[in-house]
Every structure is written in C-alpha cells, then in structure tokens.
Length: 169
Image (cartoon, rainbow, N blue to C red; front, side, top):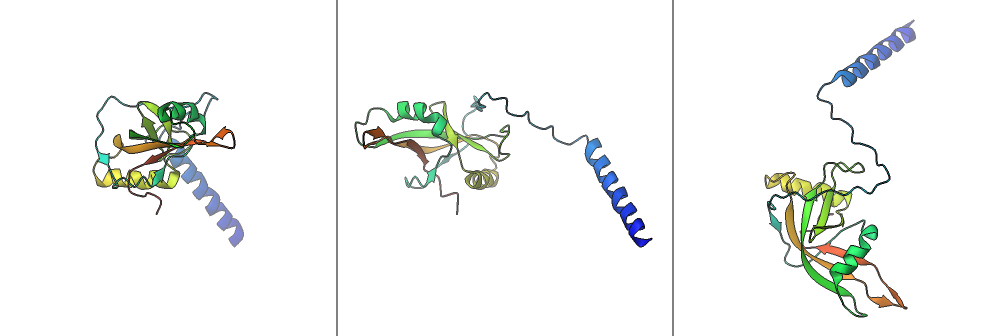
C-alpha cells in the first residue's frame, strides 16, 4: 500500500513538473539543428568593446582550424620553408547562436572566421567579459598565424594563437 502511494506521488510530481516546463512562456526556443551547411557567425558592425593583452605571450590557441586552413594559409602570407608568424588583430565574438556550444566564442582575423576558443577557454573568457561589463560584446586582441613550415616535403598545419591571459587554468 505504501509503495502504491509513493508511486502515485512520484507520478503526480513528474506530471506537474512536465506541465510547468511545457507551459513556461519564458522557455528559450531551441536553436535549429545543423542542416549540413557550415554555420558561421557574422561580425557585427559595432566597434569592439575592449582590447585584451597579455604582454605578447600568445598563450591561447584557437581550436577547430582544420576547415579554415585555406584562409589561414592566405593570412600567413609567403614564408618559404620556415614556419609563419604573421601578426594580426583578432576579433573575439561571443556566439550565442552556435548549435553545438552554448558558451562559444568565435575568432575572426581580418573579417575571416578562423576558429573558436576551446569550451573551457570560452567560459572563462565570457566571465572576464561580464566582469568588465561587456558581456556579449565583441572585443579584440593581438594574434599570430603560425605554422605552415615545410617538413618531409609537406606543409604543416597553420594555427592561430592569441595574446589574452591564459584561459584554461
């Protein structure tokens, strides 16, 4: 008898929670699922809120550059057989529409998408933006496009490193 009453209470509670969740008008609408077309955020026309620096240490590496290798190669410029170290200013854009990560931060150089901060780095970077009262706003930092050296007859990949304080402590 006690089991039946407990089960009835659990089912009633679950039904009530379900009804509250389904009827909540403030519930965010889910993002559309990826369609096979590569998603890429767009840079806003607004000026960056902040410029970050960490004394030219370039300790933060951008991830997901594989699909951006042609852009990175163009940005690296001519560097012969040696590795490139081309200086730029990168724009970091909190990407709230990313269907894969809800705390994503996209990285652009000269208006070209070059990748994202890692998930851990993006979360910490967004915390830094909130502390500076610049949440959700684009900001900039110095960057370098590195790599592309010739090794055993093949070009190595290019990477982007950023001059912001280390974000994955």
